[in-house]
Length: 207
Image (cartoon, one colour):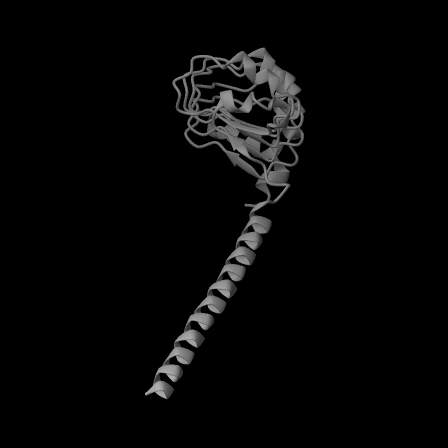
């Protein structure tokens, strides 16, 4: 009887010990896995997009991307000019009637998305944003573009969809890096479309 009890106690102790060992191993694996996730997700090159200007202004010089869409804005807050290192600004689907002058001081901008607003006219100051690679102007009631659009020689994407555009300036021939050009829903005569294609052979020859 004593032998059986002793054997039982030994077996029970062994089981408890093995459970403790497994728990320790599991915890070690869990910690290692967590560290790996942190290493994978902590890409120093990844750009964080801010969706609140208030939050962005806490560290303005560190902010590279800001999105304020669907807010019913009639004008952009002047505080945006404090984000001196801004590279991406998305303010589409608001009620903006103009791009304020202080935006053109943000010369590091690479992406400006201002589609679905009420601009009507695109100011010639757009030519100051010479680092732009993406310009979204979809659905803004635009009839044409200023000649200084040709200054945006780094532009890769230009979205003019759903604007009543009747003509484009000859200076668009300078947009030699253009890879995506959206012009659906325009009012450009067919003959002028041919002229546009002639001005952008580096783009249209791919089709």
